Length: 322
Ligand SMILES: Cc1ncc(C[n+]2csc(CCOP(=O)(O)OP(=O)(O)O)c2C)c(N)n1
Ligand SMILES: [Mg+2]
Image 1 (cartoon, rainbow, N blue to C red):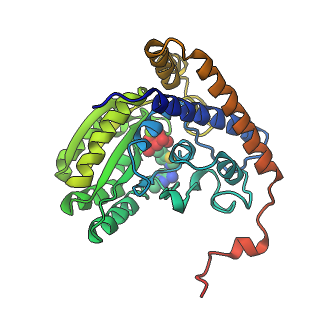
Image 2 (image 1 turned 135 degrees about the vertical axis):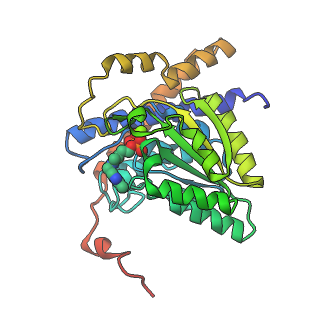
């Protein structure tokens, strides 16, 4: 694979720092009750998976995920103001304030959400891919899947159908070791989740180091190329979530484990690589962090200053309008 340019690596760094700072800010806003809802699922720790995977796509390709969706939305190019306004249930949010944290979506980015029902989005991914194949397009669907979602019936239905019809889907398992508080080995008879590809007659991709954005990019690039030309691929990114399942959950007494994973923090890994490759880069990295802090700060101001949905807004989209 051709060497990735300094400019691209810095852009990935910016996106990862943006996701981390955005999520840290959301955690604060949730505790202040400015973001409400029973859950808030943060992407902190997963940044390299979302950024590396989404970077492989063309604008015409599609992205879909579950409820841990903020980071993926930002990686796909959603404006932080629009994302933050949605978090706070404001009218200027991407879903008009009616979706909230678990339902970020933006049609012009081909970013289809944001779903709360575990694995419920997998049949939708297959459907979007069917439209692409059926209409002779070569657009690919990138579908993020939690490890816990691989034990839901939708996983079987969607992957089987994609195998039977050679649909252009990259099924990317974000294996963060847990479904809520249950470890993968306790929930899955075959904990090497990527091996399930065999059962659906599809290409088995690698188990990639999900903390290394370059490794994710390279593995998903290959999978996207294959899906575009031939059909579905299943691959797995090994990562870790820094917070509980939702921010209000206990941390399941995994502090030692958390510290181990933080030694391999995705932002730190890229930072070290950048400094090694380009010894003069440090001031640029510091500037990126300052710029991102302002962007996140501005997104909060934008969201706070935005109006809440009106009654008319609330009932719009319930029925089809002529
Ligand atoms: C069909 C369904 N069953 C159960 C739940 C409750 N639930 C929400 S998240 C979750 C765990 C999913 O874990 P995983 O797929 O590994 O994603 P992660 O939270 O680790 O990103 C469960 C069981 C749900 N939302 N939908
Ligand atoms: Mg999980």
